[in-house]
Image 1 (tube, rainbow, N blue to C red):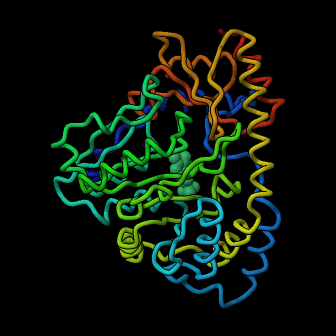
Image 2 (cartoon, rainbow, N blue to C red):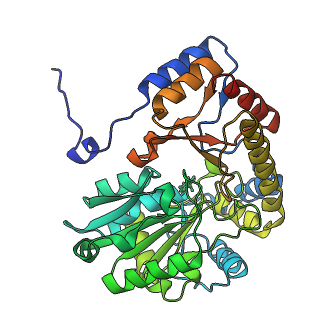
Image 3 (spheres, rainbow, N blue to C red):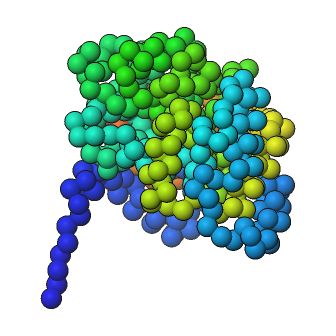
Length: 389
Ligand SMILES: *Cc1c(COP(=O)(O)O)cnc(C)c1O
């Protein structure tokens, strides 16, 4: 008998995947052996530093590291994180209850709503967005309200202009700075206002700081935990993925309010069994390498940014130079459709970029380029783009 199962209603609520046609085209060109430049993915082309790999190798030989990890994570990693945090942000964390290692920050971000959301609770999600914000909220049964990130407001969510009735029903506000995909950054005054509102209206700030270390031109990204009173209302997510080129290793952490960290630990201890211990030891090594390694990484992305944007500027496409992230959020001429533009980039330039609309309706009119290839290839990409401008 042929039984057809339907997906759950929650799974069915996830938005449809938009880029079927672009993917088909991409596959066809790759199969034909075409020289494709891929600026579509948010995944560094750079290697994980050798010292980190060596530490994984060393610790993986010890049988006592082969067991289930503790759900609190390796103690030495939690202490390493608090030491790094206090050097980097001058914020003191209690390693025993204000820090929780994660299997990459994505799972923590997606799981967190399960720990705090009840039926009828509102979550505020800025868009264009990193998709796990939305999927986590959907799986938790939250009511979602999107906050558009618009150029006229520096791509900052306008939380202050929200109706008081909405704020009263709000359980979580998601914030991501430095921002993927808009590359926007915040100052402490903005965060002070937000923290004050969170305390007044009793909502949680979920602060995604995955790009906190990928910054240029003297800009230093703040942690929301630097703001007075933030520890009462905020949980912040950090990742080894972008800082140390460790996307495949799956390592990140949550930190901040101890209750919120504890609720997340409870959810996770019922779903997963933590990060392979040697990966956690490798993470300690990574933190010890700060800031020498990241200084080199910043310089690489900075040079790529300048080479690519200078070249595009010379052919008449002026794009703002981002202060952070390895993305370029490029505004298209008026009325140019981002999906059509990316299809044209693929067909005529053999170049992959992400249409802004893929991150949400407010992303329409933009494309995202990732600077995840060499300066030489970025120059080649700019040359190809110039032919269709
Ligand atoms: C890459 C990224 C992360 C980090 O994900 P990991 O699961 O730690 O690899 C988190 N947030 C945003 C916005 C990202 O782009």
